[in-house]
Amino acid sequence: MILLSFLLLAALAYQVLTLVSLARFFQKPLPSPDLSETSGITVFKPVKGLDRETRECLESFLAQDYQSYQVLFGVADAGDPVLPLLEELRQFAPPGRVEVILCPETLGHNPKVSILRQLEPQARHDLLVVADGDVKVGPDFLARMAAALRDPGVGLVSCPYRAGRADTLGSCFEALTISADFIPSVAVAHYVEGIRFALGAAMAFTRPALERIGGFAALADYLADDYQLGWHIHQAGFAVRLLPYVVETVNPRLSFREYLAHQLRWTRTYRVCRPWGYFAYGITHALVFSLTLGLFSGGAPWALGLVAATLALRFGVAWFCESLCLKGKLALPAFFLLPLKDFLSFGLWLLSFLGNKVVWQGQHFRLTRDGLLEPLD
Image (tube, rainbow, N blue to C red):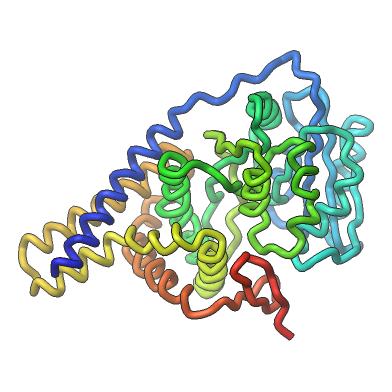
């Protein structure tokens, strides 16, 4: 009982800390764009497949309020159904703005990084952006990124993200995990230990920083290439920043089983990347501890009161992050999945310690202690 009480108090304190951290972080002003900025930007866009929102995502990068930029679309498969759309976008863009490049080589175990390595020689500019193909940004995105990189010593900036429309049970859980767990934990890390990693939805960095770490080739066999890019640039002596500019990712139509598989892969990746931080993450599961305490107390009124208070606090964190910080549109009924999500998260946290095997894009790998991928035959 004493240990459970201590764990619950620590977990509740963490929930309050997330609210404070989220409020402080998202109230920070964005860097002001410089209308006279002449530094060009190259945007790397690895693209695979075509879905209902692909056009909107890609077009958001072609409608930027920025003078000089280049967009490199990279596709690994010559038969990819997205290629006709990319060619259409290239034809209607200003001359030289868009290039569509086939990247058929397999350079390392990470297919995204393999494409980036083949796009890298085509970059004309010294400010570089990597953004996933399923990301939407506002028209001021590149201008804000360039402004953030003007600060002396800054090598990389990245952005928090929200999940888009949730159409399935798995996608509801995915959006809820982002707003109730992931982004709050990033906000806490920002103030408690500082940001030494990147969030991969949208990242901007300088060519000198990339060259200092050995280019994209240094990331070829990592699963968490975004985390490793930020970490390597930090290790090279550059500052890594998180900008309170929210981008939106397309929320995939996951089944419940696919959601669990994705989260298990993510938890095992997180564990090897940040072992001590991930171990401490176990203390954050407030609802699990409060309900366990309620059971051990035999349903005592004070314990049930703690359960109710914990539920209210967890709902508050999720709603505050999703609605006020990320400006997301997750439907209210989805928030009632939060208790189940919290218990699943605790189970996945425990399960992540029971092995290093992950399944990614249909292939089986073992994660090394450094986060590298080793194929399993």
